[in-house]
Image 1: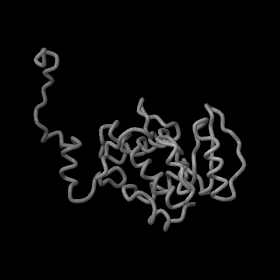
Image 2 (image 1 turned 135 degrees about the vertical axis):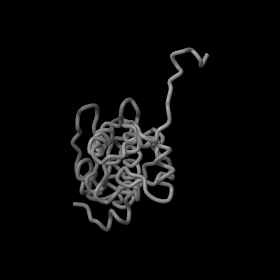
Image 3 (image 1 turned 45 degrees about the horizontal axis):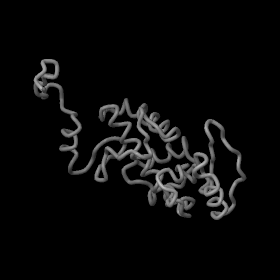
Image 4 (image 1 turned 90 degrees about the horizontal axis):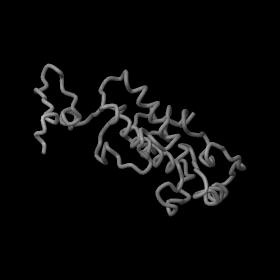
Length: 195
């Protein structure tokens, strides 16, 4: 179980602490020095690192040849740029910060794909799809680790819901208008008006 104080201090603030704990429990590790290496569908067995230096050496040896996951969040190492390989990857707080920021982005991608639902009923499916995307690196044809965050840097969400002063504007922006109050929509694409 991950320490609540560590989650509060280091995790992405757009994710609720319970969601972070569930994410780590489902897709992460309790060991900040944990390194897993996969080549294709095969998990490569490597000795467990006892120091941050050993973990970094294992990461450097395998990045570029295999998929390397690191730390508490099992953050993919060297996905965008090999220069990202810094000792902060095996620091518990920094790994949690980077990993939860990346997971929040993946959660935004999945939420947008589902049409930004506001009911809590759909959240479980969205979360499971985001976990699957975290593990595989893809969601509905999108390379999630390289994709832009559809929620943007200023997205203020908690548990998939908007909060804060812009909540009303965000609800209109995402199209969550009550059906009785929605305007008339007509698809003119079929009559050739757009030529």
